[in-house]
Image (cartoon, rainbow, N blue to C red; front, side, top):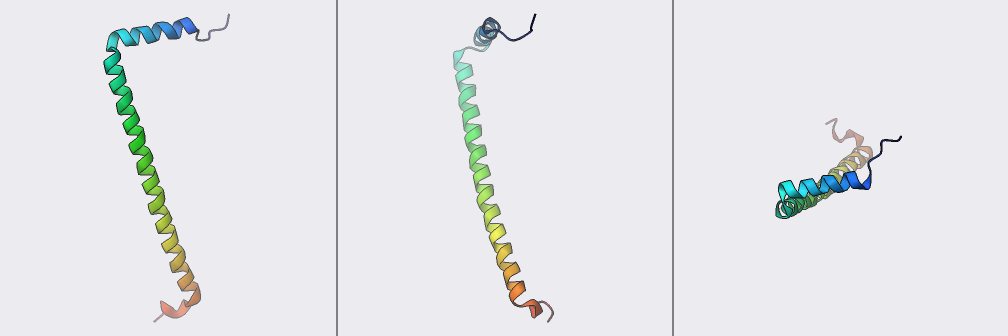
Length: 74
């Protein structure tokens, strides 16, 4: 007999969680979770933009070195 999770087992767990924490507490936790995800995505996008700036400045430096290799040997 396979030991999968049935609909009734999930339903019982959901009912127990709602009874223990209440709907208000669960909804506030979900709101906090959503805020955390949004701030994480915002932080990741700002890291990506700063990383792009760093890469472009490094590319400019390498282009300058290729154009004038004697500039550092003064």
